[in-house]
Image 1 (cartoon, rainbow, N blue to C red):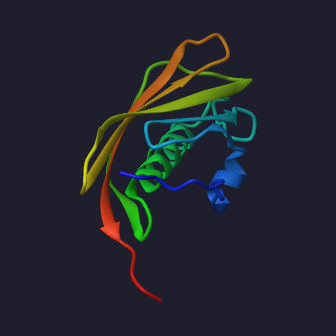
Image 2 (image 1 turned 90 degrees about the horizontal axis):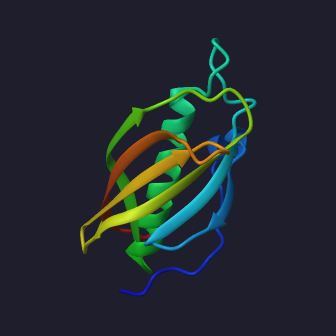
Length: 133
């Protein structure tokens, strides 16, 4: 299945989170996000920021997979937080688990600057035909 070849336009939340795309394809998406500005009250990276980061990576990979005239919408996201991080930048890598005609699933691993796993997520997206304007 041919995939879209474009530069991702970040959404408002993605911009607020400071996400920077490094690599994009249906099979593998890589991006970074700063910890500063995305911390909770205890000074740790907010779990919701990690979840939003993971969802962005998996969803865009699914949209790229969907192809012309189609789109993808998230139907399931689960995130396991393994360790806290207080500063620096985290890197997220979304790897395709299954790229089907109707469903795309990705595993997203977020690591700190030392390569230690901060969280693991799995996202499943439903592939839909885009509505005509």
